[in-house]
Amino acid sequence: MIERPKYIEYRHQRDRIASFAVKRTVEVKIERPAGALARMVGKKTKAQHDSYEEEWILELRTTDVMPDYSAPVKTQVTQASRTAKGEPLPYVGNEDPTTEFLNETVDRYGMLSGQHGSLPSPHLLIFTEEPVKKGEEWERTRQELVPISGLDGQIKSYEARPVTYVCRVDDFGDEGGQEYADVAVSGFGQFGGEQGTSQTYTVVGRVRFAIRDGHTITAKVDRSMATSVDKVVITRSTSEQFSFMSRGTEQTIGGMRI
Image 1 (tube, rainbow, N blue to C red):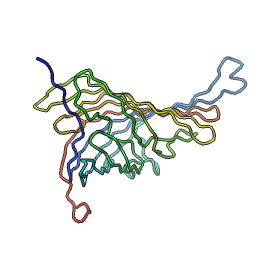
Image 2 (cartoon, rainbow, N blue to C red):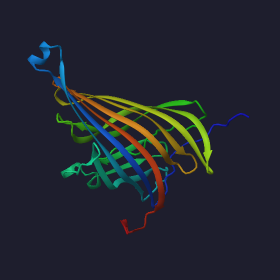
Image 3 (tube, helix red, strand yellow):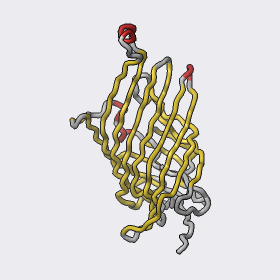
Image 4 (cartoon, rainbow, N blue to C red):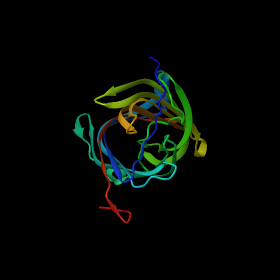
């Protein structure tokens, strides 16, 4: 039996909330030139390494769908906790993700525009406008917000940068009556910054995508931003696991949520 190509795209619905459970591991590594004494014994750099784990409840709120099927989507973290080495690590100041948001317009194929906020985009895939079959691969570039680190390894801002993605359908399947596609994804962007700063952004992962419903079911995605400035290299890596929880109704009156 010959397998027919299938359309895969985001299916936006007006007045909808999609909820995801997200587990994150964040690692920050800062490498600086070693001092004179360390260089005498063969060490060229000294490194600082920090890591912690987070658990989020992530909500995507869609209040409208445009005639071209794109949609303004607001992303919010409604619950968040953080631990380091198994011990609670409270958020301090603007570290708390529940105080942040991300607004962006997302079209049917995952292209983004009008981004404003300070959360990573939950829209992990970019699709082609043509139907695809198992083993097929495609490449597209989009503008998205990427984290910009300071010399202390903390995120100081999010800025829109072009990132090129390559996606490939590894398999089609059906589980519990839900038709899905397993898609491998990789992304790469390289940018210049102020005062000789250079940045390299990479993404790699695998996403199970609900074809009929048009949303991520599960995903495992690793993102990394390496920033080099004044012989200091700051690498901020995030490993994320997404699990779809539910899709509900967003009740609004005059544009206000109730």
